[in-house]
Length: 177
Image 1: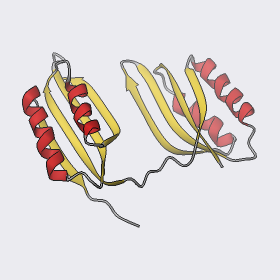
Image 2 (image 1 turned 45 degrees about the vertical axis):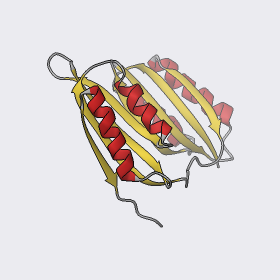
Image 3 (image 1 turned 90 degrees about the vertical axis):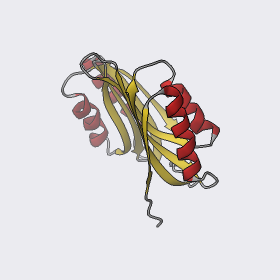
Image 4 (image 1 turned 90 degrees about the horizontal axis):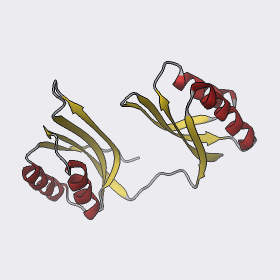
């Protein structure tokens, strides 16, 4: 089994997910991880796809490109090594930030996380409210063993205070198998 990352983006319309997943289904490929979202009228897809060894990747890519062209999408497919799973992170947290929109929110929060070795596994931001002045951010993060959750929370609260935004940091229970 080989793994690939597939990225596509284009003007949002019904049928994009069906078209791309249909090609993968017909070629016996499995979607292992996905992120799909609308960003200002554009639909973006990022997939991790497991491709059976017997599948000719050039045929798969040709079929995907045909669908992408039909829908007016940009598409790229590239191989990745390994299964992409890390055992380095031992706990997880959810970080929610709400406040008046201002420059630097993403940078200051992500810079703090990076300085502590905390990995952002998913991040969503959105301008909300009637006048589009409310900034909402949701982060899922992976915490390495050497980071104490309470210290992470305290440091994030200091950044939130500096930015004058509300923050909630929750540790997510994990199950070890």
